[in-house]
Length: 579
Image (cartoon, rainbow, N blue to C red; front, side, top):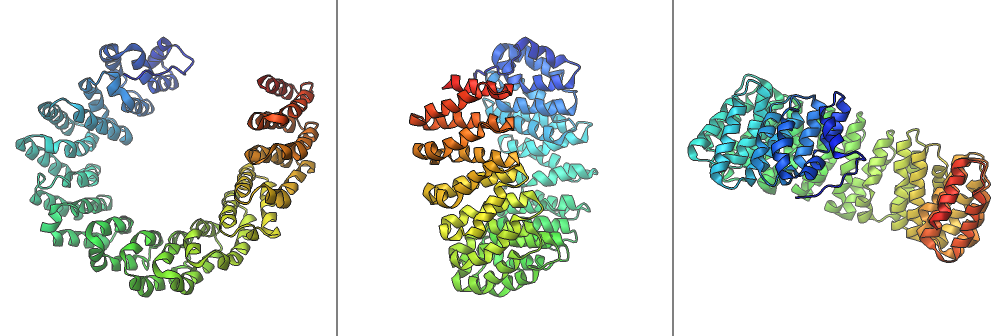
C-alpha cells in the first residue's frame, strides 16, 4: 500500500474532523486529502470506518463531490487493499449526482473496479445489479452512467444478460428526454465495437433512430459510431449503409452537425482508406470551404493539414488551392486564421516549384493580414514553407511584418512575435539579426508589460546559445547593460534578470570584467527592489559559477548587509550565510 507524506501542516485527526465542518472550504480541503487519511489509518480502518463515513458525504454540495470523486479516483483501490467491492456503493451513488463530470468519473471508476474483480461470475453479478438499479432510478441523469458501463461489461456476461443490456440501451436511445438520448448517442461508439455481440439489426435500428432525431446534438455523435463501425467486420457487410449514413450527416441541415462531421473528416478518411475518402468524402470538404457559415469554412480550412495527406497532388493543385485563394481574404478573421494554421502544410506535398507559384502568394497575403493573430499563427508554421523554399528567400518579406507585430497594441501578440527570432537565427544565422531586428529585441526588453520583457530575456538567452557569447557581447549585451542608467527602475531590473537568465553561458572572466562592476554599481541603486535583486543575482552567480567569482560577489553582498531597507539587509545576510 502506498505511504503518503503529510505535507498539509495539519494533524490527521484535524483533517478528519474537518470532514464534518460546516465550512465548505474546510470540507473540500479534507476531501482532497482522503488518500492521506486512508494511508495513515490503513486498509482495514479505511474499509470499516472511512468508507462508511464517506457515504454520509454523498449528499454534499457539488464542489465537495467533485473533489470527492477526484480523490477516490487516484489510488483508492490500493488504499483499501485492492478490495474493490467496498468502493462500489460509493461510486454507484455518485453516478446519480447532478454534476456531469462527477457522474462520468464515477462510472469510469466502476469500470476500473469491474476489471479488478477476481472472476467473471462476480463481474456479471455486480455489474448487472448496478446497471439495472441505475437504469431504474427515478433520476434520469443516472442513465449517463448506464451507457458508459454497458460497453465495458457486455462481453463478460451471459447471452441472456447481453440481450437485457441491448434492450436497456435501445430504450435509452428512444427515451422521451433529449438529454438521455444524447448520452446514448455519445457512447454508442463504444458499444458498436463489440459487433457481432451487438447485433447488426440493433445497430442499424438505433442509428436510424438517431439520424431521424430532431435534436442536432444527438445526430452529430453518430459520426463517432460510424467511424468505430468502419473498423469492424460490420463495414464489410454493410458498407453502403455506413457510407450513406456518413453522407446524410455531411448534408445535414444543421451546421453544427456538418461542423462535427468536418472536424472528424481525417478520422473518417483513415477508417475508410484514401480511395474511399477521395471517392466519397473529398468533395464534401471542398464544399465546406465554400459554406455560407463562417464556422464551417473555418473548420474546413483548419483540417487542410490532416486531409491533404488523403488527397492526390493533382487534386490539391486543381481543386483545393483555387478555393484557398478565395478565402485568403475572407471577411471573417477566424477563417483566415484557420487558413494560416494549415495552408503551409501543403508545401512538402506539392514540391518547391508549385509552392513558389501557388502557396507563396497566399503566404505573402496572409503576412500582411490586418489581424495580428493571423500573422502570428502564420509565423508559428513558418518552418513548413522554409523547409521547402529555404529561409533566405523569405527573410526580407518577414522583417516588415515582424516590425509591425512588435508594435502591436496587444501585449500577447508582442510576446508571441519574439519567439520568431530564434527560428531565423537558427536557420539563417547572425545575418538575419540586422540592426533593425536587434532594435526590436531591445524594444521588447524595455516593454511596459512584464511578460513581454521576460519573453525577450528568454529569447536573448536562446540567441546566445545559438550564436555564442562573443556575438552577443559585440551586438547585444553591451546595449542591454546600458539599461542600468535608464530612469525607469523596471528596465534596470531587466539587466539583472538577463544576467540570471544567461548565467550558464557566461565564463568567470566575463563576470569579473563586465558583470561585477554592474552589480557593484546597482547595489547602490535608489530603489530597494533593484538592490534586492542584486542579492539574488549575486547568490545565483556564486553558486552556479563558483571559483574566483565567489569572493568578489561576497563583497557586494557584504556592502548590502547594512542596507537601510530591512528586506534587502535580510536577503544579503541570508545569501552570505548560504555561501
